[in-house]
Length: 318
Image (cartoon, rainbow, N blue to C red; front, side):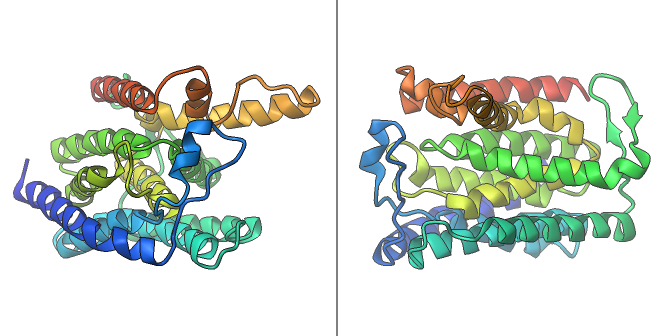
């Protein structure tokens, strides 16, 4: 690992770990407590009141660390923008919910507008200010790429928004989104360092920030990341993949995100088609396993192990 990668991990970890004991009591004083779904697993009721918006730790650590290296590593800028942009949308949503005491947060059209705006700016920057193409490298086929031509931009919007919401759905158990995404961030760090893409300051910063955040987010969590963290991490994953021309690899390394979002789509679709029947006990998928009797820690461990294995397969696919 080069110096930028090592320093990014260390700086982001220290920022996240040191700021945690400062931010968490502050969030508690603001009464930024999590509201737990009454129709969810009964074991989650004890989490009511646990501070959320902890994603501020992740976002601040990643942005501060990456910005420090941005002059020498300009390719981090679009990924940093996508991470910060989606993190800001998540922050506004969280703030309105927990501080403004509005259960709905941002309205659906405000969320959609914000996500489309951030994604559109990212796409424009990619096309006009970088040498990155929108062609996608095909896993396991050496140097083979898919170019969708006139559909490149619609596909980009689909991939980015799908990934962001997949990570958001994954954030439902103590340490789940953090543990899964730190493995995905390690995958992107290995690829960035191995290919000389110049993205290692931000990929390694996410590794360090999440390791620091996990000190407070593992079961029993003393803080949740909220949409501030989950949307920011989704932006990071999608942005890193596009900057390295690896969007198709998200299906492999982000298989947990994919399974979570598909479980919601299947549940809602089946519910509507059958007039109220459910294909799963509860969606997203991690809640289904909870209601099947698995503990939070076991689900997190299994999902993280699956992600690690899939990331190894992803490296093999390069």
